[in-house]
Length: 311
Image 1: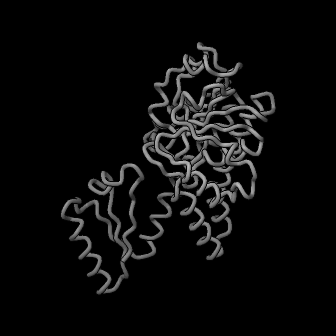
Image 2: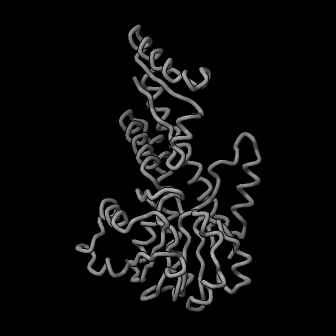
């Protein structure tokens, strides 16, 4: 049997109790069909029967990969448009709203950001790419691989904009990173976009101060080593270059800039006048999640740069 899970991190129990669908795949012979129906009877104790789908094995396994690939594709699609918005002066939020009202498209996963992370999206897309290549479907493989290429581009583009906006150098400058987890309400740092931004800023010799409500410093270094191959041994001075702060205010104190990289709700309600007074001037804000009130920040005195927004 194949019974892929569709649980989102941070809402797993809710997703289990009230799933959009349950998918059960089995070999299409007498024993396989019987086994599938037995599992159906288990789920039917709390899931409406019409939401329990039965398929063959390949359909079930591919459905899991395709679901995550489609979600990641939407993120990369709107992120590609964010670059065009910055070049033309359009507002990516306005475009997302206009496009999302179309019921054929819908509003979900149309929030531009520094890119997707986590353990599932990239892994499942690469699995899909591998299968396409295995069966000689090279154009299909290239199509799905481009979703990852665009995600990598978005992360790199964000860091490059930080450097260019700050007079083409961040050497020796303190930069506060608000949020390190790949999504709010978790401490998960697997493939988190924040890690790649921090890596690139460290290579530019910036002094990084990170605050995240749930992420532990040890987990940051484990993932940095595993994914980026970056450790104190490979990059002497790395440990001193990155400070983990106890709160957002200490992270921003004396900083030349702060960047919001995880959409934690608490970042929306920070005392930004207090933060501005304690920062070096000009004080830069880089909103990688478009969750802040940019007009208000500019009134305070910040120089604000955001994904897919006119500067």
